[in-house]
Image (cartoon, rainbow, N blue to C red; front, side):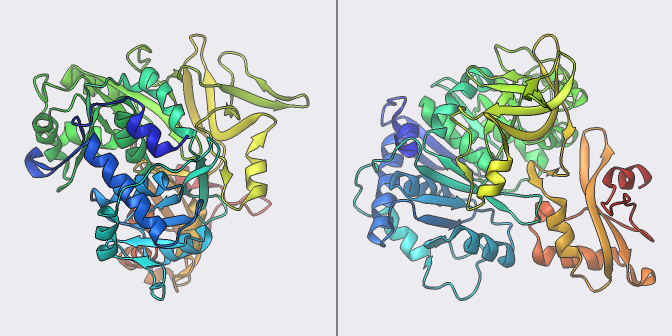
Amino acid sequence: MNLAEFCLTHANADLSTTALEVVGPGGAVEESWTYGELTKAVLSVATGLGNHGLQKGDRVLLRIGHSSDFPLMYFGAIAGGFVPVPTSDQLTVGEVAGLLKDSGASRVLHDGSSPVPEGIGDLLLGPGEIGDLKTAEPGKFAATDDNDPAFLIYTSGTSGSPKGVLHAHRSATARLAAHVGWIGLTSTDRLLHSGAFNWSYTLTVGLMDPWIKGATSVIYKGPREPDVWPQILTASKATLFAAVPSLYRRILKYGDISRTSFPALRHGLTAGEGLSAELYALWQERTGRELYEALGMSEVSTYLSSGPDVPVKPGATGKPQPGRKAAVLKETNDGMVETEAGGTGLLCVHRDEPGLMLGYWQRPSETRAAFKGPWFVTGDRMRRDGDGYFWYEGRADDLMNAFGYRVAPEEVERVLLNHPNVQDVAVTEKEVRPGVSLIAAFIVANDPEQFDEDDLTSFAAEYLADYKRPRIYKSLQQLPRTRTGKVRRKALVADG
């Protein structure tokens, strides 16, 4: 199978049906693509990339902002048998250079505005070439196997540097379970996603899912203040809305919301961050609509959720979607065994799951370490109650959650240690109010009298994408450590 072909042809949608709408301020339609137009453009890009000498399996790094060119290049690369590497336009030049080196990309698709390192002109296909790709003679979808590499996404690793997560073409079939167990998706739906095109949450839930079903994807392109969303929801006639919990919270805080708002909306979808029982209750009270949560990660996408057929239990993440093999396990001398109801263990996903990654890119030892027998260990601590609902109990490692992105504290610490007035540093999440956590940096300064939060903020902005940057800085005389020298991050939060 070919993932792009599966997405665009699985539902056998009428080629005149609208596949993608890009809406601007006020919800006005700026672009509209039918399934016929979208498929033709994707196949043109596939042909064009092949004309530039790419071979099956070659990586293609995408440095494109929030425009329809992003999905055209992404799915066009997949259609041609190549492997796109999506990146956020928030990344700094240094971060992009690291991904380019690690991925070994053969080409960089550049829109002319997203930052790229100097000296890579021989790899660049710029705005002119991107335009030519879209007008190349469309060919056919490449003949790829289920387990051939389809796309490579980068996520934070506990080593302090991003690591690539390689997915196969078969991963598209795993989305069918989410349509039933979480989204409640039908071919007549109009799914509005709040994220940028380059975010994996948008690429899957915002684009792949509606296209696999023959529905319409709606993406907003305009100012992103929270008070604009009620108007966008109404004007776009969205029947489904996907966002992170923090955006739902801001919509309720800054928008004029009632039960008559956005009348076409059936229910909301949330992922990327934990949905608190308090926010769920507030959304339901103000709008009269359900809000269904899903848990996923870069390695396996969304697989636990509530949905139209799985009633929400406030505070719980949900249940495994139909066909998903997920369990709460603990390690014993006899291997990984399932915990009793109410017991806490590690959330694991069976290696037979089609949405599970092929592995970490060029990191075989880390790939092996992520598996215990037939189980992939997610790193999330969970408990399962007597009704089969899973409850999140925190991470087994120190990965943080920032606006739906997982961020390794070591990556942020490594950058801050290069500041001339930073002697030692520890980074962790700090809850500032129920359901809202920010990245906090605890600094041991070389000269405490010269501790300057604004200077540290400016320094971090040079080397870290916005979502990775600390929002809180605090000066300490020393960091709390264990006898073996490991930073006690929980003690930082408790004392800070």
